[in-house]
Length: 199
Image (cartoon, rainbow, N blue to C red; front, side, top):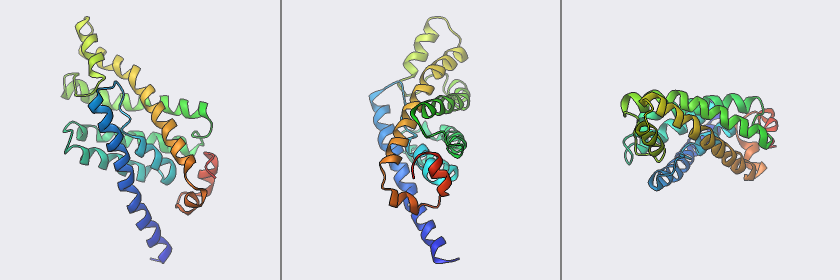
């Protein structure tokens, strides 16, 4: 193994804790405030854009495993983080983080993908109610006569696209604020960076 590959691995190992810290710091703050959004995958999307979906997925999954020490519900949603990284990785490879409109569309798509994998967990495991702010919407829908599954699906259809769009906009905003000299040192192919307006 040459020195450059070792250097890249060390750099990636240093990046993962940064992404985990971003996810947990913002996500747990939003959860405490009981807002109907999450903002707990900004680090996942950011490092998916910068380093590929594998690193993004590692950041997301570790965030929710570590975060489980504070919020025991988080580990149930590790596959949601994996899904977010996967969809964001596909979008980034196609250049869909370049231009505000594309980022918004990407956020909406990621939102519906996250809703699709989260709904069964929320409905079947938690009976529709978790400690998030969006559960207030679900509880209201259930009280007004909607079924459990319909209430959870409706809530997710409203909250997830907005939440993931905000997160995608935040992630690409952070990425664009980073020095180009730093970006050029990442292992991500330069064509990947150029497609997304980072180089």
